[in-house]
Length: 120
Length: 225
Ligand SMILES: Nc1nc2c(ncn2[C@@H]2O[C@H](COP(=O)(O)OP(=O)(O)O)[C@@H](O)[C@H]2O)c(=O)[nH]1
Ligand SMILES: [Mg+2]
Image (cartoon, rainbow over all chains, first blue to last red):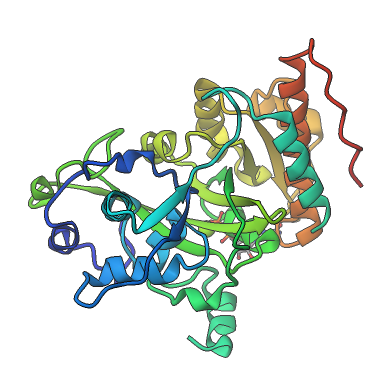
């Protein structure tokens, strides 16, 4: 199920994350559509993927967009983001769909969606 | 990638290659803070990518998730060496609804073997559109089962491939679709038609969310075009 021409090499993923599985800072909290914003510029010698994230996130960027830009699986990007968050280099704007987890979406948010769609 | 190249890619491929410079898409507003998700699910070739492209502010992007086993991410990358992993690709687009709110649309293959991944990837989604081709309705059975089991609200959109017409009742029967789940017609190549599918889904979600909180008053949104 992998498309041709892609670097699926687990060794690359291993290298990017230093062989770690989860960052200590709740990488799991990054939703696909959590919007990430840089709080600092890349520093010289910084790992290139981290530097790329900081550059891309000068404007808010969703986790899934970062994964696409970097050509890395979402789960690997989450680990990198956990590191950046722990270092205070990014902030994360998590989705808010309803007050209660797993509940139906908030009608006020749905109204915003309707207005936005009608303006398309 | 220059713009001429990206137009060519768009016409022939539909989605971008990995690693595309983000400069090819417009930045979100600096106050963007709330990302919402809608999933478009359906069989191969039913028009998911076409629909995403029709309504998206950006050319559809493609990314992937790698899983070591059902329900888990790459939880031990050292263990990935020599272990079988599953990689699924999905495409997505986005619509900036206002300065704060961005709607992401995901095109997701509906085949059985992917579902353990979607359950995890798409938790927290507002709802789903099941895109069907009436020539191959059975391709969507599994997706509908799964959405029902998962409690994800959805509507069904019949994409027009110009095949023989079936009545709404015939389609509902073939899909075993309850009467309270909207079934709409669309042409995924049309921006207006695809937008109207999303509006139909959001109307359905709105009805569900207000009927479950009947006691509180919500102003019904104006009806759409
Ligand atoms: N006639 C017709 N063709 C369509 C429609 N939607 C998509 N297609 C075509 O069907 C093919 C598959 O569409 P695609 O979006 O790639 O399907 P996906 O596999 O679900 O993402 C493409 O060649 C589209 O141009 C439609 O509404 N009508
Ligand atoms: Mg597709």
